Amino acid sequence: MSASLQRHYKLRPSRYLSFVIFIACLLTLGVTYILPLGMTVYSALSFFILAASAFIFFRDARLSLANSCVAFRLEAEGNISLILRDGRHHAGKLAAGGVILPFVVLVNVRLGSGGRRGLVLFGDCTDTDSFRRLRVLLRWGVKRQGPVSSV
Image 1 (cartoon, helix red, strand yellow):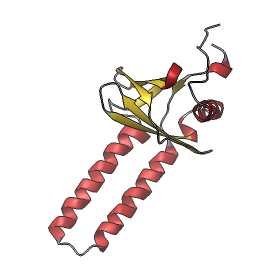
Image 2 (image 1 turned 45 degrees about the vertical axis):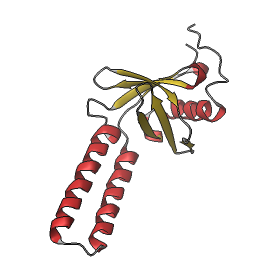
Image 3 (image 1 turned 180 degrees about the vertical axis):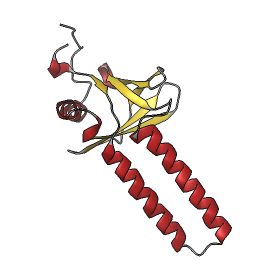
Image 4 (image 1 turned 30 degrees about the horizontal axis):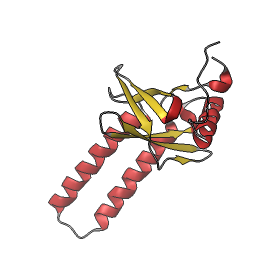
């Protein structure tokens, strides 16, 4: 496959996403403690915030859970195939609402099973050239690209 037609992306753990999750957790805890609530409610909310942050951290930033997306493949007509750590594949379509910035890409996926999945991809989740190619491919549209040829 030619490098200009790359459509398979292997992901690795992201330090930037880890940092963002940590800061978001701290801010959420800080805002929670400003509210005039009882100690029992503080404890319950703190536990929930920490558990949710830990789940997101290990699933999306460290890629260490079984349902972590460790690779994906962009296909024709906006189709995408997510490859999970445990070897399962989820087919879906790119959904509207994604964001493409120079340092982060947010991809919304509508899964074939009826669910949704979001991918938050910072520049350190793959090599620089692959990240650039992904941004260009998503910005200009997967639909316009021809079929991938294996040379």
